[in-house]
Length: 195
Image (tube, rainbow, N blue to C red):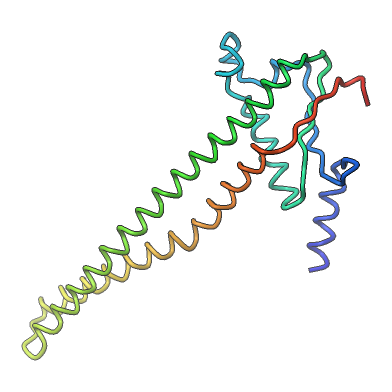
């Protein structure tokens, strides 16, 4: 455990902190336009997509710092006026809420799929038990093979449903929470010359 704490401290030491001890995720860019996808150069800021490298960097940084409180700080070489900085804040908020909604839909699909698999497994298991009771005493090889096949199919379906839910649910929930944290993060702006 000491090794993990040491490693975590080394990671956190790479980041600056605010006077309130929040981790600063520092992003340097030439101008506001550099934060957006090249394909959207002529679209209004409200409709532009954030640059994927920027999105990946923010996600990786927030994953790396764990549960630490953080702020996102943009440093531009060209001055950005109030309207542009407000649009950046809105873009970050909207984009990460959009990612949260996508992940939530994915989680809902996975939950539905797990429920369907579980229901199918229960029905097949019920049929298997019923078939075993009806053929008890006068079993043929074919009836035994069919009953065992049903039994195996039921347990495979049940196992997949439970495994999908237990294994995939927690990472989806973590990502949903992380996207929400990023969307609601404090965002600061500086000109690169102002240190």
